[in-house]
Amino acid sequence: MDPVPKPDPSDAPVHETESVALEPGQKATITMSPSTSGNLHYIPTIAVSKYSGATYAVAVDGTSRFGPAAMPPTDPDNAQVTFLPCLQLRRELTVTVKDVRATGSEREYLVQVIGWEG
View (spheres, rainbow, N blue to C red):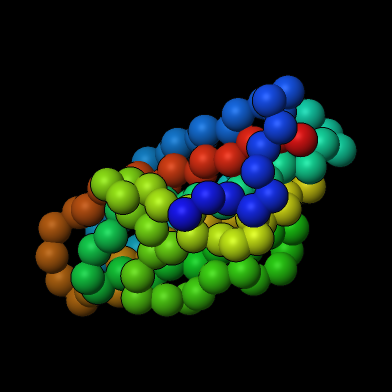
């Protein structure tokens, strides 16, 4: 699936990754902001490690755009375009992951944001 809109050749790529380790019952919120203030970022893909017993949510500039859901928009092994049209980010992207299990061992979650700066 192709992103909508498509990037121009002069657009700067955005590929950010963060990882977080969560124990059962813990929650993490990963926040990403554009490095160049005022430039619009287009985000077609947000990939997060997929585990049963977890919930996922995405907010863009304070507005909920995904979840909470029992599965991520996509996972790093697939990293498919999941937002059509692309999410448009000006100030802040937050990805919230919660391990809702009652017991178990620590899990590592990878959060991957792929897009471009227009």
